[in-house]
Image (cartoon, rainbow over all chains, first blue to last red; front, top):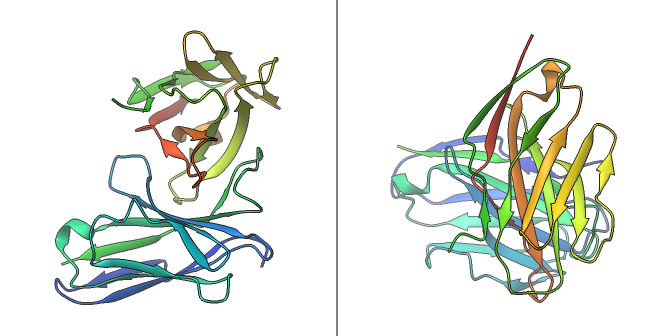
Length: 115
Length: 116
C-alpha cells in the first residue's frame, strides 16, 4: 500500500482480555517499529523489527506484551491480560533501512481503551 | 535525564507570522539525527524535517527550518508564515546512530495554535 496501515483504528476491551493490533508497513520496508503514546505525551519506543526478527524489544513494558512479524512484512502486537494502564494510542512506523535521514513513515495508530 | 526536552507545552502564533518551537537534546553519541514531526488531531505523525549531527548547514524544507546549534545541543524548529493548518502537536525526536535499534526518542511535544 501507499502508507502504513494499522487496524483496528479503535479498540475497546475489558480489563483482563487479550488483544491483537495489526500493522501493515510500506512494501519493501525492512525496518518496523511499534510505539505507545499515552495521552498528552510523546510516543515511547516498544519494539523494533529488522526483517522477521525482533532486533530490539527493550521497550516492551512487561511480559504481557509480545509482537511478531513472521514473514517480514505485517506485524502484530499482542497484549495479554490487558490493564487499564495499557490504554493508549499504539503507533507503528516503518522505514527502508532504519538509518534513513528522511524519517520514518507512521501509521494513524490504534487507540486502545481498556475498561 | 531526559534525552529530548521540549519546554513549551503550548504556543500561540498569529497567522502569517513566524514561530520557533524549542528542542534541546542530550547524547554522548557523536553521530545522531534529529527529527521534527507534526501530529494533527487525526493522530498521524507527519515527518517535517531532518538534521544530521554532521551536517554543516541548517536543514530547510519549504516553510520549515531547523536552527541547529550543536554546542548548545538545541534543534529548534522555525515555521515561517504560519497558516491555520499548522495548528497541531509538534514533536522533536532523536536517533542515536550507535544504537543498533535505530529507534527514535521523542520529546513531550508542543501544541501550536495559530490564531486567525
